Length: 366
Length: 267
Image (cartoon, rainbow over the protein chains, first blue to last red):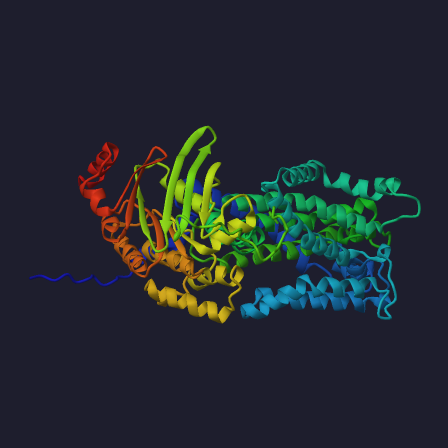
């Protein structure tokens, strides 16, 4: 009687391995792919070699002023000299340690999220990031308590202001969005109606309009003597605007959860809020992590619109220095710096959302 | 919160109903009617279930059997008639509904385990959040029932990593962790591959022998023969015939029952 023996694994043939195979399969598999490879290669070389040459090789990084710069290279001295203004706006120099301390706390709660640390540590740092950090940031940056001198919001600016707008906007828009999404799927007609009207109103109006209304029109409707801080009005506008988008993203996730999950949770005797909090939302939010990341990134970039109501966020701060006659033709450097800052934060958020998706994967497909 | 409670006497969640004539009836269904829009799915059903009784409900698809048992824990609302479970009448009062759901476990055709929680967490959720059992105690109970369904070693896996038969056994354990008085099974083996049906039925047979009150919608006639005290045949939203399994399979009274049995016992 013959018994079956499993064949041993064998390595693939030599022509199917290594760099040569990769080149042949990916770049030169057909004649038109070969042509494309050559054309795009030529374009990359002619574009990026001069760019790198300008931005790094010919560039001047240190110096005292415009005189140190090389006309053929980037003048990063400009960014270096104005960095304080780009980061803090008009925030008084002697108090800059306060936002700096907030930046440190921010880094402590955010950076570990990207490191291979235990989930418990990361969870507690994240909880600090959404509770303690905003509180600490408020007391430190605004001042007026604990012997810290008060700094009015009109003097806040730069990257600090961008981060404040984005952070508060994200932190407030997500929970409001979740409540709106749940409300829109409510069985109670009044609640559903309110949520639908709210979402559709805010989604139908451009953010610029909302910011203008918040800064110009709102004061007209308020009784005399009642004023709200301009920054606060902008924050409320951004938050409500983005929460409407967030609501629709979350609603997409709620709709993707099979009916059986709702029924199983009901059959166990869980009440409405527990069903949502323990069963439905954890699954729904996991599904829509890419959509939430999308909304959050777009919120971050939309904060630049506060420029039009006279708040100097990072873009506004950089833009306002470009007309300085002491520095000629530093526009490219200024905008590249802004783009780089935004890229760092947006790319970070994108990576974090990927990481979160992987971490929450439990091998189940609905 | 969806609460329409009257607000009187908070500890008197369940309005007790006198059970004089038909004592021992843990479920009483009187003149139950349900419509899906214009479609009359359940037509005047009457059924009393004694404590510890094991009832198998069968019938062709679309006969309303699943809808019927889903009415018993109010996953479906009925429009006319009365359902009293363990002395509590089912109506629109959320408190009553939740009180009944605490005592009635349910097992679904598609398991409906919570995929984002481990097997153990699936079993702990309701005892901890609904019954307010301390976590350690809940873990003990959960492991006890996971052992009873013969998968204690999978406790820390996620549902997505288990086979269908294992998932269904976890679903049974999850329902049992609430220590319900009644278990409802809605076609628990219909979504399983054939080789996994037995492992689930074995658990159900064992559960039946422990004295649990069970209502089971199933096509497993072997299970009905060995376990059921009564077999109910439904067709077109009506209870056509109710009989002990011996009589039901050997001597059905109604032509519709005979036709159905011929169809399913042929092969």
